[in-house]
Length: 131
Image (cartoon, rainbow, N blue to C red; front, side, top):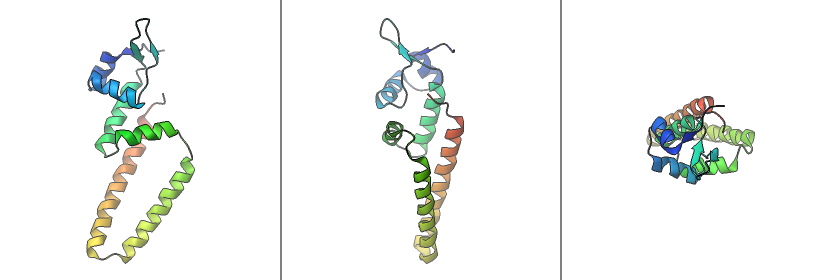
């Protein structure tokens, strides 16, 4: 087992402040693996990758609140949600077929954003260790 990290070590390795680590902990985005006898939090080294993923998601427009909500909900019905995304994409395709030039440009911009978010989700999924 890897040595657990104190909050300052985790912050330093993650490139964030200790206040950010504390904030993420409070939101439930990361959690302490255990506490010392002096009640100091100790974190699994995998939290470094988790914080990196949080930063990537946040940079791509996913709010910390949305991340925290998703973690609280758990895996849930992933197949159902992916099916809904598929349906939404089909609706978008149909709308694009009937859109005027201005709406068509807006739909192209939205499509590019969706593609970026999907790529980010795949990258994060492949790199994020489970906690």
